[in-house]
Length: 295
Figure (cartoon, rainbow, N blue to C red):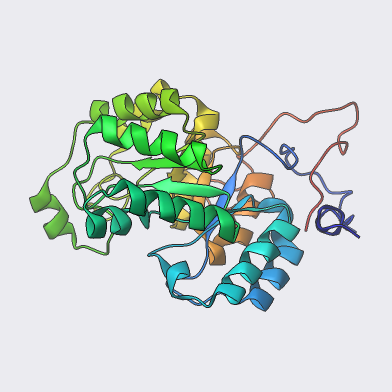
């Protein structure tokens, strides 16, 4: 049985109504999960997790360059396990370390891109939370990544110094950018060939005294829904995005939050503010047709 078939095993509870979601592979309603970083994620654990919940997961992202510390055969095993479940694998924003340690040496960057491609990665995130990079150079990285056979996914945000576990006071002292800066660069990167834009949560919903919902509104109004993904590794944050963008918002969460997000997207559970309030319009003639079966 293929992984796709394994993940779409019919549930005994399909007679109960739940929201329609686009089937995999999809271009909206994406859920990307964090892999090894705060907690180790072994190949066995990942395989078990995705055997149960893989139909609701589209991507696995490494963080903090964790993959660069793993034995090659173990790293390839993790990537192959994700692929078995029709799930892409992203590098996360480790290119910042590559850029800073090499002073932007193109040969080193090219070697990094080739190594990621050869190892089996599908998506290369291009972040600059800690770095100041000219927009043209950033766009050049997008083009280089695409030419290397990887899907470029720039990460943009409004917070200077984003990308680490900094305090609110530290980030406030660093200052923030105007939302227009974020949007203008996102459009430039999409024109350069970016397949998706990751919106950094720091300064918007993470490590702030008050959420910058104005920034979220500006981004969702200016950029195509299927081309943006919000970092939302906090239940209150992904619930806000689902409430305001609908069940098919593209979101990045921790792997421990898959179940809660899936229940919210499907409209079968929630909190007092979301229970029974998250709805999609179904496809097909009957109420149950074309649904993603419950895992």
